[in-house]
Amino acid sequence: MMRVWVLPMLLVLCGSVAAAGLVLAGRPGAAAALLLVLVAFAGMNSPLVFPRSVGAAEARRRSAADGRPVAFWRPGCTYCLRLRIRLGRAAGQVHWVNIWRDPDGAAVVRAANDGDETVPTVVVGGRPHVNPDPAWVRERLSSPSVP
Image 1 (cartoon, rainbow, N blue to C red):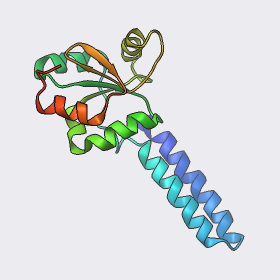
Image 2: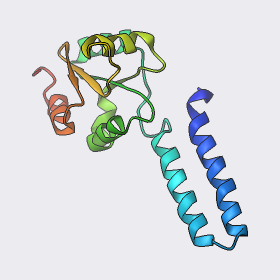
Image 3: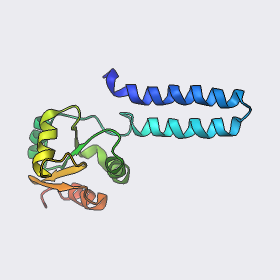
Image 4: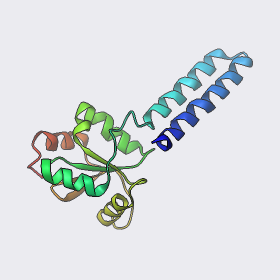
């Protein structure tokens, strides 16, 4: 659990040190801007942005039971972040699989993308869709039986 917070904490710590240096150099405006940017980036890479990830096998099982999409993602992916933000509250209905923490999930993504780990890869009705439009995913959440 603690491992997922390492990058965000490191970003905030480095930002704080750099901001302190800028304040001591007489540039408080630049310090505030730098700290704000790094805190925002840390937040985007924290577990607060993405719902809790599950393993690929568990996500497939849940998806088969409720018909909801499975989204394969990885930390630091701007397209994954875009999908998550544009889904808004509906993102909690998607089964998220972090391919860096789940080798089975990475294998699913490689199989769907000719060996590449291209994310986000969203599986709906057993069919993978690479970097789908968030509006399309939202439609699938409102009517999960339609692939």
